[in-house]
Image (cartoon, one colour):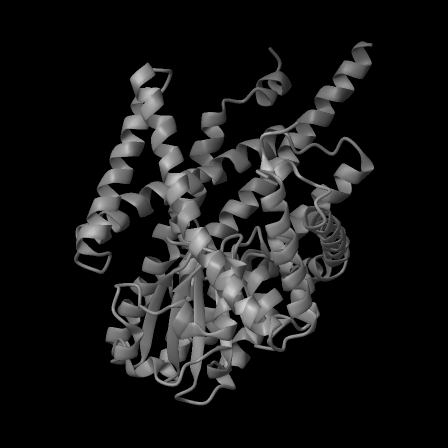
Length: 277
Length: 207
């Protein structure tokens, strides 16, 4: 068997080990490559900066643990930004698994910023129904979510006093890993009720949401771990988004090397076969 | 009647929801709220129906001892434990549900998704071939976008992030818009067929 044939049928475990090392080594020994902030991330940051202290932001946790490494750092970034500006947060979820992840982000940062549940932030929990939940919230939030995620009546919480519909919020931010998610928030909250909507989504979803961004239907967009790292850069702190960028840089580069190397082997093998013929 | 009643309900609900969008005043605005509330109740019951279906399928697999029936036991045990712990003691921090969610569900779900990186790496070596001009263009675009999405891209050449943004903002956006318009037109036509009772496959039971 020639070298080319051997490389063509390389054991996939070698590739697996290479990609493991490409992820693990930069996490253990960070390089600290500079992170450039893109306009979509800047847009979301600016939209929150424009809000006055005491105003309310609606956060929709529409993701699950599988996409947590990408979306959770964005969630933390936005919560941190809002808490630092004394903006009140109302969380909810169109995905059942997102509710506890959002709550974790709240509790982790509430301690750091001295925020109280029910006064500065609240989690309304999960409601099945996707786009119709958003539509129902646009008409009447207390009727759609009469209790918080733990089953306590929302009337007991000062943060929910006077909250009727989307008019009570300066901005809605959706952290999404699929449907229902950003598309539904744009369709109902923005297009129908004129509410400003921002989004944090996985990298693989990002290309599909650029049209909404360009049309002004989204005020800002955080795409994948890069989006989270950009937001952390804007907030001037290093979180898990920034920490993961070195690993992602090396992993992407390795995959590109694999693509180029695989194609070189392919063309050499093809030329050999043509010569034989 | 079994078919006519669902068709009548679909027609009325569909027409009312269309009218209320263009005329957001009474009585249509009130009807929209009412229909939304009904939908949320139905959606909640659909979840219960889904759980019932899951129980039926997997208990059948266990009783027949079909291939992989052991996984069905794991599934049903997981479902029962999470359901009882959540309904019985709540889902907040400090509860058994929270412990299971945080220490079992999250690591397992993250592990499954992380495996994708290995498959992508393996596929990039074995399958991404520049066999045609179109495939070559796609590969070049993919490499530029991949590099532009990480800080290393800008470090290699300062123009790479801008090239990636250009690909996302122009060729990608044109393609995405075309797909979205196609989907929207398809959705409108299918919805009209359903509302008018031409499309009936959603009722089930027929060919």
